[in-house]
Image (cartoon, rainbow, N blue to C red; front, side):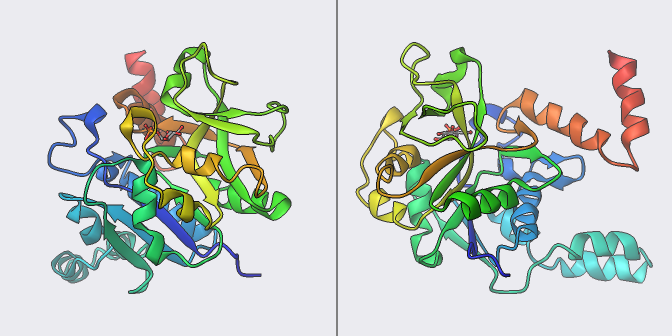
Length: 289
Ligand code: G1P
């Protein structure tokens, strides 16, 4: 049965401040993990989960992503002429049919909630995914599919969650819940980036969400929250009690590729999973440990 979740929104307008200078002239979503940029993993996972429409919320200096999801004619021709069929396939096979990928600009950096709101006219009136490519998850089942399956069980909104050290709650949206240990904790409340002393739990949101379209009405209020930004967490919090709302303790390991150490770790972990690279990379890791 085709998934009712037809659209995935990727907020990709951020500056990548925490990984400068690498991101001075390339989008952070184009940073490679092994041999594919972060945005490739994110889009691939959504497509594998059955999503038809991809919406990238971009900004200035993000054209590299549009080129990435387009045919590179000169490269294609050169590879064809030299008989490099396998490489040629690797740069073509992930391209989606024209019309499946859309781009909209977030004209001002007003926060994640504002970025998602910018996509409102490109999302149908059903549930949709929001996935930040910074939050890369290594798992047997793509997180997008895990969220869609969880939504099939519970209905309503589902956000990917994991436990973080209490001293880190001020980096995340944090759940208020009575059953934090369950696979699908019921969300009673959400707080964006609480001080560790005030955090209602340590169960924190990873930026992979399955949301009901009503969140757009809440985002349209353009209310500022933590950091004076329009927060997705605040808009989601207003849906609690009106619609089912659950966390999902996803299966897999999450890497925060918006930080240098998270990105480096992701490279090692993903390379060690690759049959063509694992032995060589394991030897390199041993050499430097
Ligand atoms: C965003 C969300 C936050 C979430 C985090 C996960 O924050 O606002 O609720 O926990 O992503 O990475 P950001 O990292 O963009 O500041």
